[in-house]
Structure formats: structure tokens, C-alpha cells
Length: 338
Image (cartoon, rainbow, N blue to C red; front, top):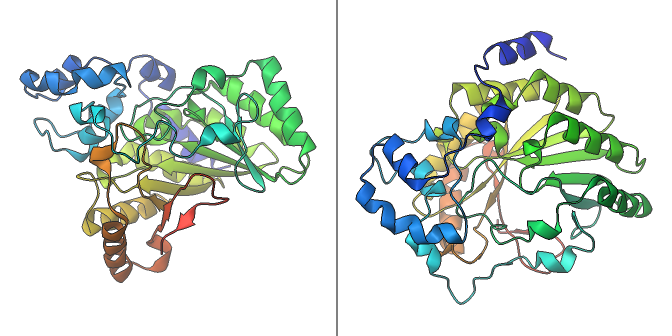
């Protein structure tokens, strides 16, 4: 374990991540005031809040350019009136996840791996989220109910990888996270733990020495897939946290969503790949947006996404080019588009 890097991470944390998580910006008016934006625009997003509330961590808000309604980070979190418009192909459950939710807290869709909804909440509400309508109320197991999930995993010996998702699994306390990892690690045929998270991006203070010990002391091979869509999301503290995770043997990958007026230009994705690589994270997937209700204004056509990625491929080495994919309901894997 790289103890010097861990000490540096902990010593540079003026606030505990739990305090930041409990003090999110949830009032649109407060966000506009913080960003020095015209409050007369407030009505544009107010109606969307009833469907999906505003949540923005303050460290993330500091990376949004003040006075700029077109900032790509703001567009990801601002509740726009356009969310009330859905296309004919849009659905609250575009991936038919209810069909693969045999018991509370578990999604079993793909061979060899199972997804646990380890947490029912996130630090940030990304407006394009494909689980914005997910029934977390019925997928937040108690300790006893987790026993049913663990029994399911133990009985299916084809499952080699446990995927912690949610919500955001790193929104769990260290104690809760360590307990769940310990329980999964006792299942002998599971060898890999994959964590899908946005927390190290939006609240870099979440990367602590204790978190790294929890991940590195488990017998499971740890893979972390962070969610970052734009290089502007990666400030120096965020980069330091990602590099420290990688330096301690955690395989670091990133997945993005190609979003209209956020990152749908080749140069933006090229800059993102380079910024990720500078902090030891490899681009993994670039998703077409899922057709979830309320996200029509983020949609990018398959043809245009292929054009964008073609230019990215021409300018970057292969290991910095994410795989363009689309998830389709009922398919046994993600569909690779190139």
C-alpha cells in the first residue's frame, strides 16, 4: 500500500466527505445564486423537480463556470423544463430492469456477474440518469434481507463478479461498505468486486486511506468504474484521489455518456481521455443515452456518435478510445456499436 500517498490524501481533506454529503445544494435558487445566474430563469427548471430532485455537491458546483448557462457541468445537473417532454420510445424503465430484479437489492441480467443495488441514493442527481425512475424503495435491503441476496449469490456458482451499484455504493458508510464486501468475499466462486461510482468525481474527499484499506484488504480483485463525462470535472484534488486509488492496485476505469450540448464533440472526448489517463484511469465505455423518460434533450443519434468516435480514433491511441455501446432491453450484453 502506498502509505505516503494515503497520508497526503487524508491531510488535504479540510472537510469530511460525510459532512459534504449531508450539505448538498438541493435548492435551485441557491445554485443560481452561487453560480451568479439570473434567477428569472428559475421557472425553467422548477416543474422538473417533482419528478427528480436537484442534488449537487458543493465541490462539484465549484467546477461549474459562474455566469454561464451553457456550462457542460451545469447542464448535467440543472432540472430543465424539457424533462417534461418524452419521445414515443422513452420509458421510465428503458432497460426493463424490473424483469431482471428477482429479489430485493439484486439485478441479474448478464452471465457471470450480478449487480447489487448497494445504496439507494447518490451524491448528485444527473439529469440523464437511466435509474431516475427506479424503485429504490423496494431495493434497499435490510441486513436480514441482504442475507437473501447473499444466499442467491452463493447458490449460483456461475457468478464470478459482484457489481456494487445503486444509487452510489460509495455513499455507504465505511462500516456498511466493509460489511457488504466481507459478506461477498466469503462466497468462494466470486473473485472480482466491481464498484460503479460517481462519488470520487463529485466529492473527491471520499477517497480516504480507510476506503483504500477496505478495498485492498479484501481477497477480491477490486475494479472501480467512475463516471465522468467532461474533463472540466477533473480538478487537481479529484485527479489526486483517482491516482491514489490506482497506485494502490485498484483497476481504474471510466464510463461516460455522450450527451447533447455536454460532450458531443470529438475534441471534448479527446480531452477527457487524456485527462483521465493523466490520473491513471482508462476510458472504458462511451454510452449512447438510454431512452429514459425525461431525457430527450440529451439524446444523440447513433450515426452522430459514430462520427464523433471516428474522429477520436483518428487522434488517439487505441487504449485511450472508449468502446461505444448501447444497452438494449432483453439483450444478454451491451451492444458494441463499433
